[in-house]
Image (cartoon, rainbow, N blue to C red):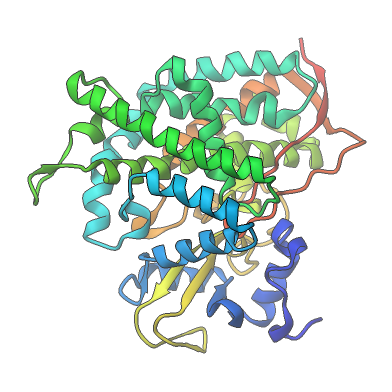
Length: 421
């Protein structure tokens, strides 16, 4: 067993499969200092809860951390590529902090504008439309080569969030590419210089598309999120949102609105292949499906962690942390904490309080889209299980997550199956 001060948290294998490392950290150093980034990894469930509750000490205003991450990603690019990307970035409208990287009361003044679209009752109204999208792609997957991510997990959430945002059909193909590029920015990837430049142009083009839609919705409102953001006012300032504020909110939904649900679909299929006895147990069992969704989110959290910034000298779990440091909350580790979830590696359809998993975060920053994600998963998994059986991994393929400090996704998942009559 390594000493706590030698745990390589940024080792590539630990970014692809962090779970053995998480256990070691929980056992040996649940608050672990990573000196090269002046960051503290927090891996126990109870300590995460403690941090999330204390919003005055642990702030969500961590934009400087995200800026540092972006700069680090460009550090090794040739000067001419850096310059070209920089030119594209200067074409973009600056986006101020909203929702995810704000504390109260500013966080709520933005969140309240869109929360009406994501209440449980509002999500319920769209169930028939969501089911129609799911059924269409489930039927298409039957005729596919068995690559589940491309055949089902990617297109379903992308189409559903596109409708909810209000992306016109003619712009969907571009939007799907742009949304995928936005999520990919949170992963560690080796891109060609051409792809780096292409993604920079896509980001500019996406902003231009969204702003054109904002202006169109101000002239002719529809029933979608862009309309709400285009026409809502910040009451205390008696003004419409700026283009930058709207873009900031929409960019967060680009990732949260599809990437996390896509990942959860992929990991749920992975778990069904690893635990084939669950397939028959879940068919015709809506309550079992609900628990299975929570267990999937717990065992393989699509968002592994997010930062907090320490506002004053403090102590957490017996470790002194100076002001200005960053805390990295590891939701993926907390979800596997044996003290909170007995036998955490096992899918337990009888698990009590399965919804206590932290894949959606907790507290004031609890994921606003959680009801929509749960709806898609609880409708999508039965649609797949109704159509196929004896689902198993392709023997020639070993699934692996893409390396990322924030996300945990399967880029592809090749399965074999039998059709069910």
